Length: 132
Image (tube, rainbow, N blue to C red; front, side, top):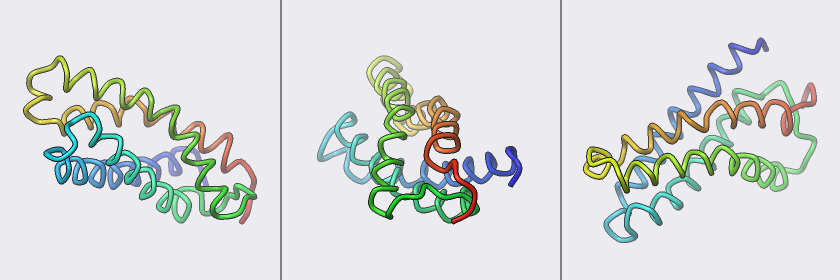
């Protein structure tokens, strides 16, 4: 699969992950607060994007790991982009008034900031082998 087509699939999986992330955040932010709720919502989004990226974006590639180890590898790699993602989100909900009122804006800014890093680590570290 060509680079840009693969990136488009990754982006589409990311949009679904964004919806999962935002939806879970809004469901639990009243119980856990904006910062802790985002940790939980991010974990849910990682699971959703792993499933989508495994089946769509990198369907012609293999991690050459068992399913559980592949997920742990994906999660570990997503933590790099996730750290950047969360830092941008936290800064926005702590210091930008509009993001305090609409935290989905912080989720969006954070998601975009970590997306390219997450794509590159997935492509070149986890799903680097041809064929499943």
